[in-house]
Amino acid sequence: MAADAVCPRCRRQRDHALDQARAAGPYEGALRDIIHAFKYDPRPTLARPLAALLRAQPDVMAMLDGIDAIVPVPLHPSRQRKRGFNQAEALARALAADAPVVRALRRVRKTRPQMELPAAQRHRNVRDAFRLSRSVVMARCALLVDDVSTTGATLEACARVLKEAGVREVRGVTVGRAVLPRSR
Image (cartoon, rainbow, N blue to C red; front, side, top):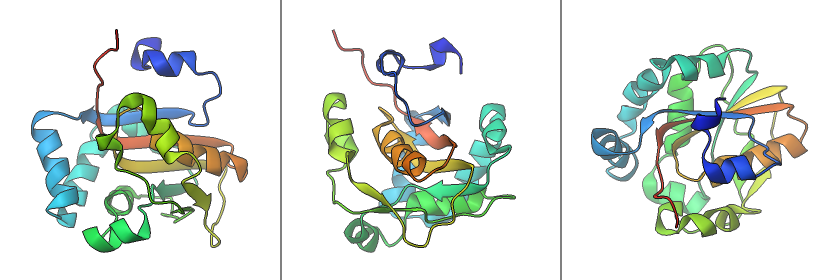
C-alpha cells in the first residue's frame, strides 16, 4: 500500500491487524446517497450493483486473489432485526466468487453507530465488540467486507479477532471510504 494511501493516524499506529484495505470510492455525493438507501431504506437489492462497483476497481479485485474466506462485518442482532438484513453480508454474498462467505464473527456488544462519534472515540466504541463465531471455518487469508470505512476502527477490531484465531492475513474492502477533516 502506498504511503499516500494510508491516513496519518494509521501511519502512526504500528500494530495493525488489518493487512490491507481498499474502497470503491469516496463516501460522498451519489455514492453516499446509494449506500444510505442500501442500509436505511432498506434496499438490499443494491448489494449486486455495489459489489459490481467494487469488482470494477483493479485494487479491489487484487484483494480477492488468494483469499480462503469472505467475512462480513456483523451487526448487533437487535440492529439486524430492525434493518431486516446485514448490509455487509449482502455485499459479501454479491461479491463472492471462489471463496465462501463465512459468518466468522458475531457482535457481542451493542455499540453506538460509528457515524455518530468523533474519530477519536470510534476505536474505543468497537473495542471488544466482536467475538469469533462458534461455527467458524478458519482461513489463512480472509477478506473482511463492510459498507463504509471512516477511521477503519470496525475493520481493525474485526481483523484483531480473526488474527487472534489464527488467520495469517486479513484484508478489508468497503464500498465507501470517508475522509475525515484533518484535526488541527
